[in-house]
Image (tube, rainbow, N blue to C red):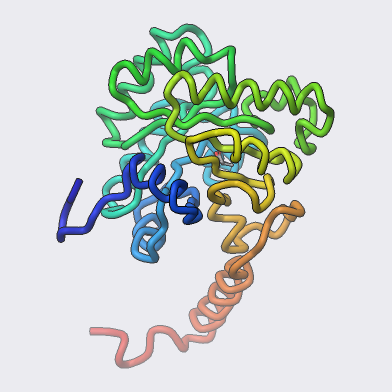
Length: 271
Ligand code: KIV
């Protein structure tokens, strides 16, 4: 599929081909036009309009409060910006757990109103009916297993999941169920590296890890964490590639100083 400027779009098939030839997949979250444009221009393979927008954009403690309308708003901004990458949008809490008809309606709204390319939802066997129904309508679905933040009140903690054999076995089974249902990829969040590698070897579809080690088929990070916009979130799996909190704070301090000191605007900066 080709879009503006003859840029070749990344599709779900591209990701499958990348897994087949052993090329790792890069994925980041994005929620707004300006940042999505930079990440797309840099060559990111997949942008996830994550429900982590609830945390990093809206300041909520969990991902639960964000609404379908709010996710669609973020997704529209990202879709307007990105010309090359695949754009996946999270189904927010409460938009798919009720029943498969509701799940399909939510997925259709995301595809129709935002122009997304795929949706992501959390869970295994318990959501498989919804996954099948959404895929049967022609909408690609990405699964999400391991630490599933929409279930934080069930887990009680953001600690590593599936360290015990029973939960690891269940996760592997759920991964196979999601693949069987037709998911094109699965996010594995915060699980032991050995399990991430095992699941990735067993599955034909690509796995994307966040805190799931190096044996998975691709990596995802929340953009704000990767760019160092947050100072107070330092899980072991996070590598920061910039310190934008400090950069933005220092720039703002300089601006304030220049305004107060009547240095800004100078002669050249006025009409
Ligand atoms: O919402 C999100 O940012 C996510 C990633 C952590 C995978 O689901």
